[in-house]
Image (cartoon, rainbow, N blue to C red):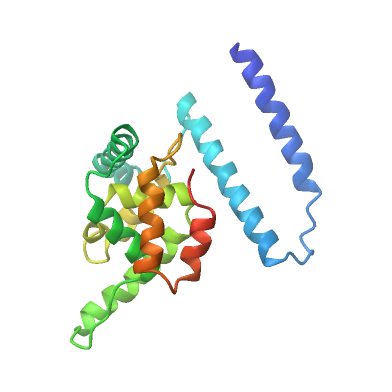
Length: 207
């Protein structure tokens, strides 16, 4: 397909979308399900937009230039981890994946012996977990495969770097191997039975 045809097709899609946006009534009361559906679709649209920008070389990083440059080794590590999982159809570090998912949806564990500083760090880590839970399901899996939970906890990774990586995490372009679904559902039975957000996450589970 020629580049001219591709551009023409994208122009038609964007024009149609712009017309659709004009029909949205900001005063309407959306149900929770409708709001969630619109949010999920808008996130897919944002991902598609950034993918187009990356493929044509016009992508602008979601953070300051120096942070973007410093994050390159970790972003490269993330791409490699996802590629390895898809190619090998098995986790290289299954325990790391389980710990990440459990932390993201269950939060850090508190102890009566935690110091004030440790409690503050754990509370701040909860905020980071909430940020990750707002990602698309595919991106949550990609994050959990890519980074050790100890590497992105508060006190180990700065806010600028965390925000940059969370914005930059890429979806897997193809289906995940069956082992991903197997582990996710086992975690629901073992560690995350009480998490309603985890149930919602599984319902939007990556293919």
